[in-house]
Image 1 (cartoon, helix red, strand yellow):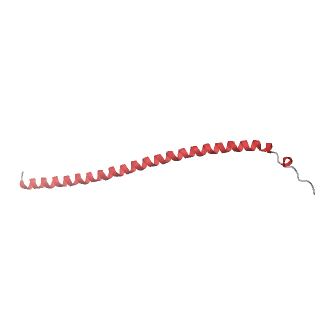
Image 2 (cartoon, rainbow, N blue to C red):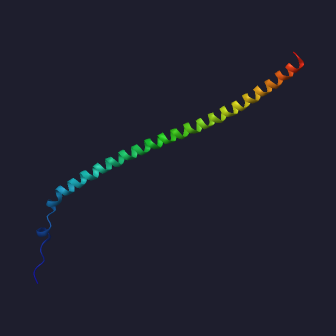
Image 3 (spheres, one colour):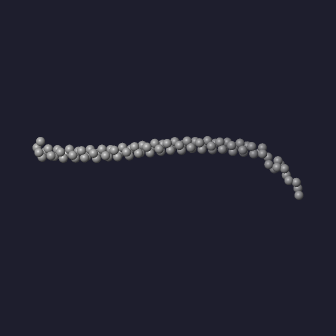
Length: 91
């Protein structure tokens, strides 16, 4: 049986230094991209929340306008009926 080969003969850590450096750059680039995507996500969430607030406000304004329209229509009908009474009485 032959003697075991020393690790240094089949594994040279220096040979992996360029790969490790490249991997570190890749990791840094990926972390920067993740941070960028998180900022974009936060911005989109903020815009979505703003749109939700605007939509709720618009729906509320539409309900208010509908109520005012109904009130105005009722007031017009009331005035027409009063005018009809005056016309019948000849005033």
